[in-house]
Length: 464
Ligand code: FAD
Ligand code: NAI
Image (cartoon, rainbow, N blue to C red; front, side, top):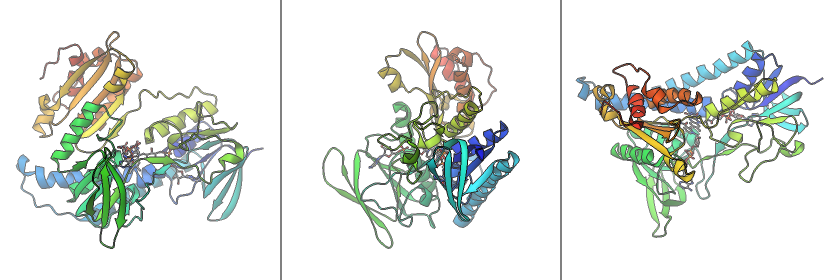
């Protein structure tokens, strides 16, 4: 008799959602987590603390620079320890919330490092020594960690990764960010708003390489206007930390002279890699690809009875992707029809303006030879955005030229993170742009821009 129906290794959005769903479906479940708290990267050092700082720093900047335009005179002063304190409180409350949900759903939280030692056998090395667990199924949800860069040694003092950048002891005078991806731009925005000069050094000749190109261009313009400096097509050759600062050297990818930047902090954010070391994959025959991601087919790995979900597998490294895979994986194990629609996984960058996208980009549709129509609506023509003094950006809808089915939506602007869900639902139901165009939206709201963009697909936008 196995101790458990399912043992999950990793307590992040993949692992904790799998464990909770297993408990809900009546499976006997345990979740092994090596951190002191549940919630994984997302709750401890990712989504949650970064959004807490993005919100607080946005409030600070709005109060400092935008209040006057609204007729409010205010004197604003940063209290960094308190800002960090409120972030820590949010993290603490949310990680404790997962522990509560474990208790509620009768999930055992096994503290320590989990390792596969044989089919259905997991050994946990924890604070109380070693524990042997047996399970009918094992789900690997060990997540990801920051990718290293030769010549740039992260010491979490002067040269930091995202975890260090969430906890800097002071506002940098000059922060150099390596990598113009999601982490670099979100955390770069936090420190710029709090007073740092921010220079972003990016290998490619554009920022956010997976975004729709037009959206990325608008995004870069907006961030540049705010004062962020971009060095694109630049290859970092090294970063040398001294007591009070760091010298970063880089050269043009296309060839040319080496340049140097003096910074007091450097954030390395060039992507993340899967966590599979010391997991015993070889003991049970779980195959990984050349980049270390666990290969899966509908969550099943190459080893019988072993499944994998979330960042440690292929696909976008996003908390909601991990969560959807968790639910589908456990539902399949319990005999239900678990399913993930990979073409409708939204992507959001929580800067100002925010960026929110779902589905195909124009570049992807062109490459696939799919004929499409475009409807686009600028926030400058949206009354609510206008009266709120935040009319930057647009909504762009891409619809199949023949069937009108929505293929992709790309938004940049105010509160778009909260609005992309409407298009996710429309796409999940196989909706056409006309379905959104003929749905009544409240006036005056920013959400009217979603409708106006859909109307634009057939050329009858009214508010422009
Ligand atoms: P993880 O959350 O990484 O969890 C894996 C857990 O497994 C970890 O807690 C780890 O300690 C544990 N573990 C690993 N190996 C073992 C072992 N052998 N034994 C026991 N435990 C083990 N995504 C979004 O969707 N929205 C965001 O806004 C967002 N913001 C982010 C901001 C930052 C700064 C970062 C770094 C990431 C952000 N992400 C965001 C990405 C998101 O955090 C990840 O996609 C998500 O956490 C992946 O979930 P997971 O369960 O696969 O892995
Ligand atoms: P990223 O993949 O988003 O961006 C990395 C950037 O670094 C790319 O632009 C890449 O071209 C560049 N780069 C790579 N090597 C380089 C080098 N040697 N020198 C200079 N530039 C280089 O990775 P990032 O920002 O580290 O984030 C990792 C992942 O975490 C994201 O892909 C995302 O899945 C997740 N995340 C999601 C968030 C959200 O949903 N809002 C927020 C933060 C992270």
